[in-house]
Length: 74
Ligand SMILES: [Zn+2]
Image 1 (cartoon, rainbow, N blue to C red):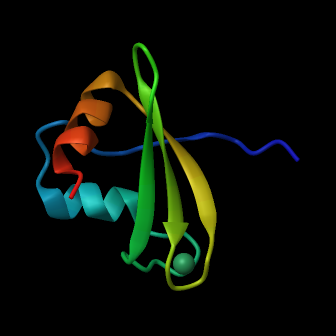
Image 2: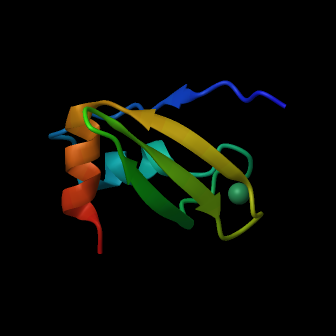
């Protein structure tokens, strides 16, 4: 089952709430999402797992977005 890769929709200098919204669950729209950053040489991707409904999706990131998420990691 091939899944179409999504592109994240935030900029590197966006507000944290916009970054969180970009990673929110697209099924139940919950912002309560566990995410794991996977960094490649040039860009990266983030796997988002919804704590509410369990939906998992992988979102492609530009290098700028990857850097932003690596800085935001708790
Ligand atoms: Zn969900």
